[in-house]
Length: 117
Length: 111
Image (cartoon, rainbow over all chains, first blue to last red; front, side, top):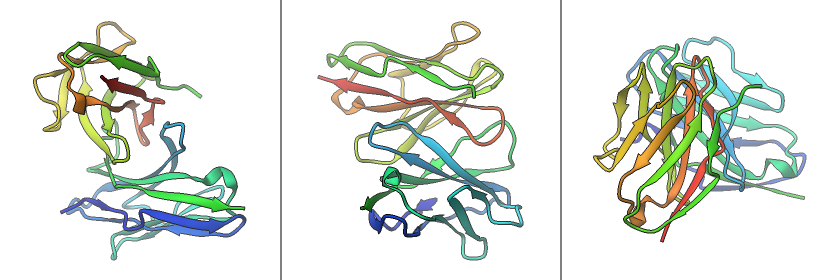
């Protein structure tokens, strides 16, 4: 079974609108972390946001928020007020096991977001 | 903010040749990783390194691959005899706590 599932290969959003990118995960470990990364066409991997399995509040970082629904095992990324520069691949990733130094992650297949002017 | 740096940004190599990809992790980080992303596909874990030895490796990381920390700052990935299917983007990462910090990647093209 896939540990991270991103069911939307591609998404379009109008500039200034909000968009939700879906991510579901599968783990039996009670301690885990969920990450979202952005990969522009230039190829680098940019960290966006992190949610720990024990965090009570949904994570937010500027225009990014993570809609964490633990019972559903989902960790959707919400981008508010989309900008043209948000056009990129977005990857959901998971670390299994407690937080600490070791941070090996498993990635989903990604969602390609295109922002339309 | 400290960064993970990778060199070169693009490497073109003939099939069968050895290639070494270089990374300088963030200085106070203790865990180091290599990941691979074949064009258009997801990022896959290759290997992790801690305390001067491999701590975990994937099934992709076969005998053709090796990693080394030759000095106090560099972390290298060597592919002994490259194949066409080794063409990919290779990311180095390091961590002390979450999240991992990724380098900008080395695009490896095998001809």
